[in-house]
Amino acid sequence: MPFDPYRLARPLLFKFQPETAHTLAFAAGKMVQPIPGMMSLMAALCGRPPKHLVKKVCGLTFPSPIGLAAGLDKGAERREVWKAMGFGFVEIGAVTPEPQPGNPKPRLFRLPEEHLILNRMGFNSEGALAVAHRLRQRPSGLTIGGNIGKNKVTPEEKALDDYRAAYRLIAPLVDFMTLNISSPNTPGLRRLQAPEALRPLLNGMLGVRKEMGLEHQPLFVKLAPDLPFDELDAIVDVVVSCGISGIVATNTTLDRGIVSELNRAKVESWGDGGLSGRGLKLKSREVQRRILKRLPKEIAFMACGGISSAEDATLALNDGAALVQIYSSLIFEGPMLIGRINHALAETRSAR
Image 1 (cartoon, rainbow, N blue to C red):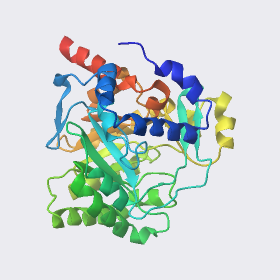
Image 2 (cartoon, helix red, strand yellow):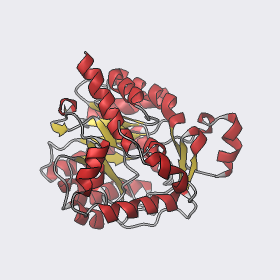
Image 3 (tube, rainbow, N blue to C red):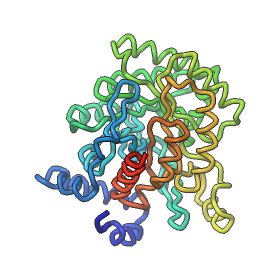
Image 4 (cartoon, rainbow, N blue to C red):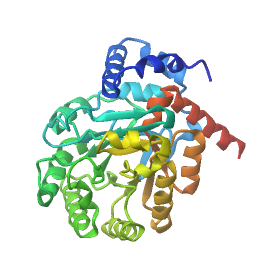
């Protein structure tokens, strides 16, 4: 792979507070995205996905099985950039039906020595209408999914109304949809994972999908890594019986045990929030393998959580995942990580 300029830029970027660094990086993307030739240059530097990495999942074509997880591009602002980096797909959001600011700052923290991130963003969102407007223009050759959640002020018993409202605006403009019921940063949201709450939610969403004539559009549900296995089994059974297209696992964890003892007190001093990054890998993989053991092969599975290398992606795919999502590792490794993973996956497949 060519020289990676991110290795020089990262120390400077990490001098800023995490959310400030995120804002600066997105501003840079906004500046270069419309410049003629810049996306082609980035694609040449990062490396386009080799053609034999193309995968068909749920009737959709993915140029690479490596995708960007929801949470980084909440408003679908950098679609061309993600394609140029070599992502096969991107999941935008989470998008809420109405705009909301999210939780008070500071709400994003990083632990570079362990490649961990703590966030309690709280579904900060421009709202579904603004995001839908932006999605009307999208690059060819990039599969796009929409991740939706409920507004903080909406009571749990009214959650279905929020998911329906966001779905109606976003679904016609993307290739697949994901119901985010597992973020730890919206009070009560994870209770929607309970089988008795999940079944009416899924049936309601399948109803609105049919009503809109989108029966062939895949509908996924995203689960947390902190569920007891007996409850996880029951949730998977509900997903299967309802006829949902697939599962994404996992979201961030509340388990501070994934942090080394040396840094645990520091992380706990940051307060509430979900942890993501390299330390989540083992916990997520246990959950993923448990789900895959119970999930029929015709239902798609996306692995997410702690994946930071080609080896991690290969393990997930060999376990039975159809697709793999990354997020936190991009912050620590930079844009060329995707090309390195794609290149390694291509070499592995060529060697078979």
